[in-house]
Image (cartoon, rainbow, N blue to C red; front, side, top):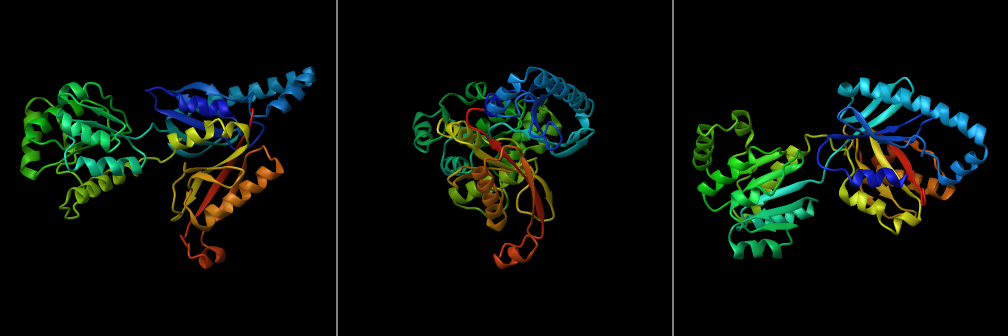
Length: 374
């Protein structure tokens, strides 16, 4: 079902978007993409591989009857999902009359926007890239902008801060870090950023300096609720002293904020691997945690792509649980399975204890197949 992943990779700004996967019944494996209580795309007639569809098309009457039945069920499912849109979980299983579906909020690529390219910014760029963020840096000084480029920031804007920030659009997956060389530049940046959608805003400086900037913006009419959410002074209090330690404190705080949100969706690294030309010539397996109980290491929505050669993209937690799912997926790939299958994984038993990986929890993992030529 490569078309679904192509659609997921091509989603524009807006949303929020939600992917819905049918877990059982006649429509098992079918997918929808929802946005603002509308169905943007669905695969109800495409959840069987091309060869199977061609066989059915030869049996026109039987195919027509099945298609009508599938369309009727699909229409019923759409109506139920739209009626229950407000009650759908951000990332979890939802029961409806046709069975269960897995709802998965499709987050955008995480962006780290750093205002200022001084000494703290360079380790921040390295850490942001390592953690999978698209890093955007702004500074009005050419020499410092060049330093950010050498650190391999994805985008460097060398303009006055107000002009540069006018070219940066925020969203619910954008993390803003203000680490400029003076409070007047901090104020300029913060004044622009608080008007944008964001996941996080942090501003470096002492309590006195950050309080001064906040007070000035409040007098100019800034939203008090947004201003109260600004992390200033920035970063977790770990007694950081060097630029590298300060960067660690900042990224740790960003991670803490990020991990309070549902962790589902399709990371860009995963979509790139699925849509890679080489992967299009083979059948791959996609493992997704759809339920989590107890202290299992990863949340619902976490995904891992498993190729026929055993290599993987992403992780669902590592250890014996991940190895078990990998073995199951490889076996199913060898057998030529096409129907999605659900596996419970218990991480509290004897096997986990022997491997030293006792978490005290369990997960349900859905294995789907992304077939070549489909």
